[in-house]
Each structure stands twice: as C-alpha cells, then as structure tokens.
Amino acid sequence: MCHGRGSRMQEQNSHNVLVVDDENQVGKTIGRILKKQGIEYVCAKSAEEGLAILEKAQSPFSLIISDQRMPGMTGSRFFEKVKEQSPDTVRFLLTGYSDMDALIDAVNRGAIHRYIKKPWNTDQLVAFIKDGLEQYDMTLENKRLMKQAKKQNAKLYKFNLELKKKTDAHEKILEELDHEIEKLRNADTAAENGDNNEKYDADKTAAYLKANNMAGQRILNMLYHDLFVKIFREFRQAAGKAGFEMPGPDKGV
Image 1 (cartoon, rainbow, N blue to C red):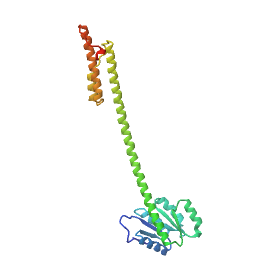
Image 2: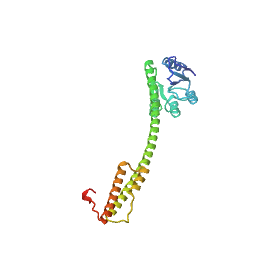
Image 3: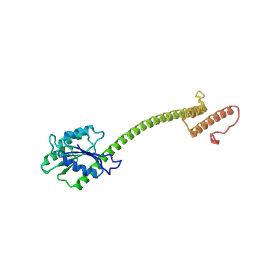
C-alpha cells in the first residue's frame, strides 16, 4: 500500500484520494500526479484491500480511482460495493477498449461517475480529478444546505403553530368584546323603551375590558360615550317627571 501527502496542499483542503490497481507502477504514477496537485492519496493493490481501507478510514474518500481488470474482483464490481458503503465518494474507472461491456454495465448501475481510457492523457486526467473533487464538494454542500433547510422549515412550522395559537386567542378576545358591546347596545335600547329591568353597567364593562387588554382607548371612549348618553337620558326622564324641560334628541342628544 502506498500513500502520500501533496507538498502544496493547503490546510483547508481535506480531500483524500484512493487509488486501486494491481499494477504497482500505475498506483505510483497516479500518486505522483496527485502529489503534484497537492492532494493526499492512498494506494491499494486489489479491490479487497481497497474495501478494507475504505472501511477503516476515519473520514470518507473524496475520490476513488480504480482499474477495471484486477485479480479477484473487477473494478466495476468493486465500485458497486463502494457506492453502498460511501455513496458520496466520486468514482473513476480506468478501462481499456476491450472492457466496454463492463463499462456500460457499470454506468447503467450508477457505480461510476466517469471512465478514463488507458493510456490516459496526464493533463486530461488532472482536469478530471479536479472536476471530481469539485463535484464531491458540491455534493457535501448540497447536503449541508438541505439539512439547514429542514431545520429552518421545522422552526417555521413551530412559529406558525405559535402564531395560530395567538391568533385563536385574539379572535376569542374579539368575540368577547363584540359580545360585551352588544350587551351594551341592548341595554341602551331597553332604556330608551323604558325597560328598567335591563341593568347594565358600562363603566364596569370598560374597566373589565381594559384590565383584560381587550380594548384600546378608542373602544373605551365609545363605551364611556354610551354611558354618558344612558345617564343623560335617565336624568332627562327624572327631570321631566319633576316638571323641568330638557332638550330632546333634536337638540343634541
């Protein structure tokens, strides 16, 4: 097993690449390319060894490059297992023209993201590797954003529930307020008709509404106005019985 650390790798770069090939020279060649780009890498000489490394790794590999033709397990079969074990890892398959059937099967199964023909062009391989690492970063970022969105949606749902409770409570207060005002109107109408059996204290109603935060100053002013009208009408009736003339509705009240 070979491994290396890129000399120009920056601290924020946490990418690690696994190279799987039974030919030792192939692993070393790709390793030199990765090291030149400042990328950490590990080499395995078989698919079985690659799976063992993957299982023991403290963090997932960003990219795995594997040969197709290896003793024991083919690269396409290896990648099917990798997909189950580390689905976010980007997977590149090294293959020759004679491996097209296996390649097509691997593509159809979603086991690989890209295939690289042997012999490869070094500049093109470097470009593929950079694209693969960017794809891995995008996958992780999308998952992070999705997780964040779920948290935000949960908070929004909770906020909507709290808002609904407050709205329901507010509607209940309004209903109580409408009921109190309606009682006041009915009492006032009964007083106009000379029905003294209907007793209603508007001052107490206003105090009740204010104490329970059920009405603003405008509503309270309306209640006090109705109270004043009620008192004036009672006083007018008493004055009339005593022989005093009071102004009627056409004179201001």
